[in-house]
Length: 400
Image 1 (cartoon, rainbow, N blue to C red):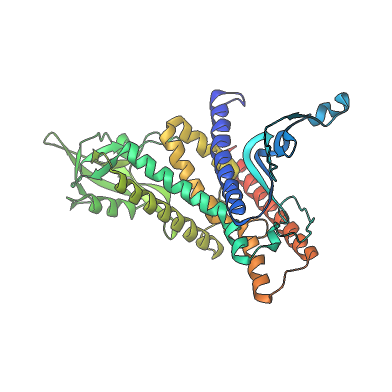
Image 2 (tube, rainbow, N blue to C red; image 1 turned 90 degrees about the vertical axis):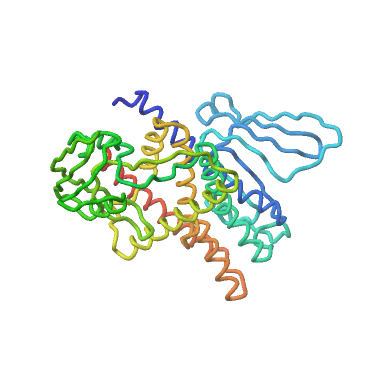
């Protein structure tokens, strides 16, 4: 597959769309809460710096600034072109609204806050981040996590409202034969099983409920089982190898056996309140899975080999895009929950790192020295960059 193949371009576009929206929504959360509690937002950018367009209300009108790309700045002998649009009764605004060259996510610069820009220009003005009460600071930091959680909830709810609900049907009839990109044909299909076949016996044990069937198969990864099934009154049998698949659970990940079948379901429309309930439950479940998985990793129960980074997310986004828009948005909701959880970790450079510093200042009843905050932020950013680099190299070795 060449770099400029359709599959590659779809993967890149899906990754930019998915991660771009999630990061933009996260930054929008910080922006909205900061404005609500009276913190001055110096800049709100769609996309990541450098800027190519900036708009700001000033007392003498609406100012628009076009930034010259760095590679032609010397030729043009200018960094930006500025012009003013006169307005009646203009109202000066504190915030510069920008579009940036990198079409990916967003960026918020709050006055008096030490972030990834490492700006230490803090003057103690009443509109600065550090001058606000601690609950206002904490709420502003939490804005991004709150928005990502709300987005996930809304997407989950909307998907079930649009697509409906599949209620499982009792019995052991095969509803679907599974297929994935890594494994187009599973053992059940290889053995000749088709939809609506009724599985009646495994390893000489009669079964009548789907839970019995999956309980036996899930407990035997890598084993070969004897399966008997009925089709139009005719009994078939074969030895089927159970493949091992790693799946997420509330406790982390586990290896289970699979033969590649899904149960029969009855499809029905979902009501508004049922969709809301589903959205809330799905957001909670995926948050729990993320938390359990993280604990499993730091406690040594799960290897770092199972952790994926931006490259894995991009690949999965591309896979979802090829399956359809509903899958793309479902994946976006799952990643939104993951992004919310990751950002609350008490690591400098993340929202949780700011939580930690604000909490320490509350305990000692005084702000930490500016120099200490800058060092903490720098160390945290270096750690995060190193971690992303490590995981990205791991992703590259996994996929290429």
